[in-house]
Image (cartoon, rainbow, N blue to C red; front, top):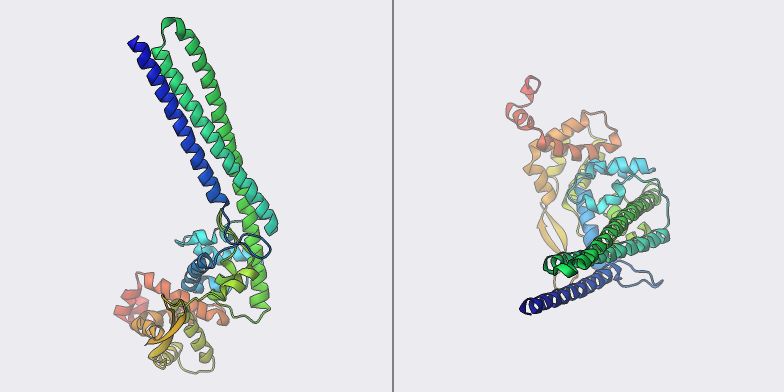
Length: 379
């Protein structure tokens, strides 16, 4: 009697735990579904869009990435006319820590789709993910039922063991079916996701190419990282994040505060000095040094007040001038290498800016600096 009572209590306890677990999984699934399908504030057309805070955060990260690597990507990026040229232009950013922000631009794709087609495929993908959660819940339930039956086999009396064993066999078959359903749902979702990634890649690349063509090559807008980042910020780059075209992204981002990036200011200074150098008879390094010494020692810097959220302007040391003078031996080598190369004259500012990083990382640089130009050939 005692053994029967304990067995009954144990069975009831297992049923209670299984029911509680299933309830938890249902709540978890509902929460995840809500999390995936939640919408940001809608546009006037009723479509979900990206809020300003997220958009500016993403845009600022892109500005930083592009500004620091403008010497490597700027020249080709703003002149790209095909997907292949666009991919080659941003290839130097493939190993960048923030490369996930341009993942769709780095992906090779031949798809040409509309924004609406992407939204439809995203819905299909969301349904596929929901199917995985459902299949997973069924799988876990079957696993629990199999464990219950295995325990029951060990506890069953001789006259009931055969019946319990039959239940165990049936539950194992159900588990195999559930396992197969879960695997199929996962494979189907992965196929949808890869298809969606290719679609988003094609859309993002085509949008950016159109923006470059209209805004940069044929338009009046300057070629700079801020404008490119403004256009790129709204493009699709990961699952679950709303997107927009480059035109809308540019219009919205251009109204959001973004302080001038120090690295691009350095590039702009190189570009400005190089234009002046075209009319000079001085050696390039000497001319650059003279122009840098003539830069103002202080400048007015814009910043966003953390309390009022308004732009404020303060006087500060000219960090561009400081950057050049503090590292002048390296900059002089970067200028020498650039002028001595076969690069196009118009691209020289990009070459010099890029050369500075190469000079910094070259182990022979400091040997050259110590020995001096007269011993350069013996190195």
